Image 1: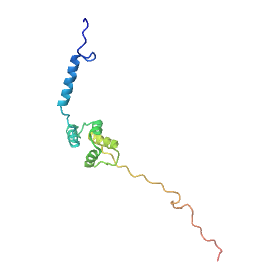
Image 2 (image 1 turned 90 degrees about the vertical axis):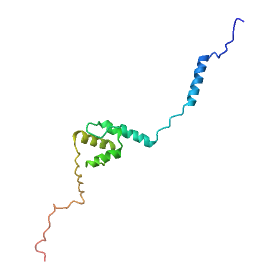
Image 3 (image 1 turned 135 degrees about the vertical axis):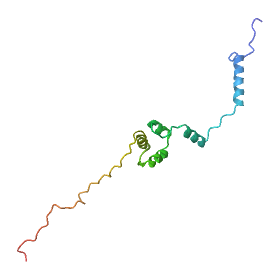
Image 4 (image 1 turned 180 degrees about the horizontal axis):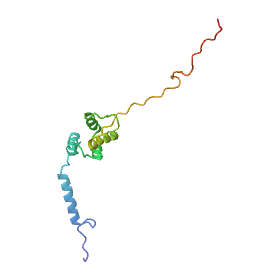
Length: 132
């Protein structure tokens, strides 16, 4: 024989087989990291987010604070809190950057309907003379 049959599979060389064996051993030996609990995630968020102070961006308020926290901050300064989160974000941003507190709008007056208007245009009729 001039021709020797291969001792290793043609598709996978011996070095590749060894690498795959090492990878499978490594993956078995490592234990997966446990996912953080909700309390741990909340604690990490609270530590890393920017403080509510002058110079904070609107985007930071929007992305790092929950609605109830924004409402609490607004209540401390006497700013109305009856709105959607986007509006509350803008109110807090305006207050922190410019010191602007929104003014409360006067309630809109309802128009009186035709049936409730007092009829003042008709004058009282006086009794006719000569009737006795």
